[in-house]
Length: 128
Image (tube, rainbow, N blue to C red):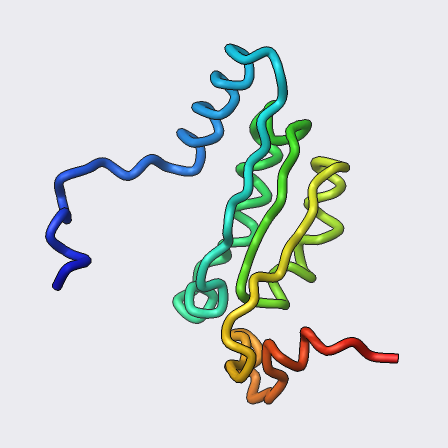
């Protein structure tokens, strides 16, 4: 239970609080600072009736800083990045999406949930 010994000892900032912190630091430094958020467990949260991508896009769109700052959105799932790719760039033209890679033999969670067998290794293989 090593992961739980600090439970309740520290506050966890919200994404909005992190955006505000980075924006304040950028203003203090006099330059843009980027954000690299990760959308976690989309398939799981969709199964529970939530829409993490919609919430993420609303948060980005509602904040002046995230509409212009360097932004790279990460996920271990493919479909959520495909879903938000065009939408995020409509909000912030310099935004990018990045697929995080798991073990070569593992199937991304969203693909596994659909019964697909494409592995991270398959996604890393160049195709002619």
